[in-house]
View (cartoon, rainbow, N blue to C red):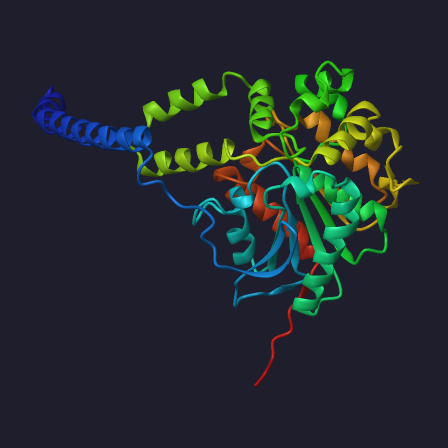
Length: 373
């Protein structure tokens, strides 16, 4: 090849490359304009919670759903217990980005216990009402529907707290295993809002709404205190990718969920402040339910604790100690480079978290016997 020929060829191709870049930039700018209008006006919002499911039990505001599947390969069934302060649709955010959908596709029979939104008649609920009332009833319904002797319990965030309490309160609860995800146990490590409540600088009564519950607006402000610059970083990333429909849809869904808190029952909140925050009862082994001592040491079923190293809501130092508190001989930690929501939503969840949880559960499952006609 003659000297300089390669350079000449590159120069000849350059106009085509420039035109290609210009065309791409024009197309992306058009998409940015369209998606910007969608965000500002709130139109054409994507939908969540699309994995097909059936309501199989309800009591008061609590609802138990079963996700439809004709490919169940493993027993026992999974019962996922969600938090009391947020909407459960974060676990079924969008097709292909859904915690429950992925576990269903892994061959599990998946159930979800959704607490709904607390009302005035829930303001007097205690932790015991959830851990010793609703949850055992839901577990029994799962067994009845599936014919299984036991259930694999999975608790997310405050749903993990309730799951630990339920398993400790009744060591004979028919559990095949227990998994907690982003579950706080050391409340001295939970950040400024918890410290304010521990010291009594903010009276709980001042946070109650007219129904006697913690108002969603107060919960939203509490979470914003934990990471006050989060919105700025989020919007900066969004502006850079405003042309990408998938990114914009994900942003809309996440923004909607992040502001969609529900009231937290007043008496439950008072118990949490007194027992979990001030007494740090998980760590000091001073839990009391209906006047009797309850200990995590009485939990002996196989246990998996999933924690996130970049979790600003439940810091890893607040969640990691759970592994040493339970009495299970078969106990494991899954520590991930993720944030609080990233454990259930996004690429890390789909590629690492859920497959690893599925592996833990599968090893402690039995195959579903196929019927022969």
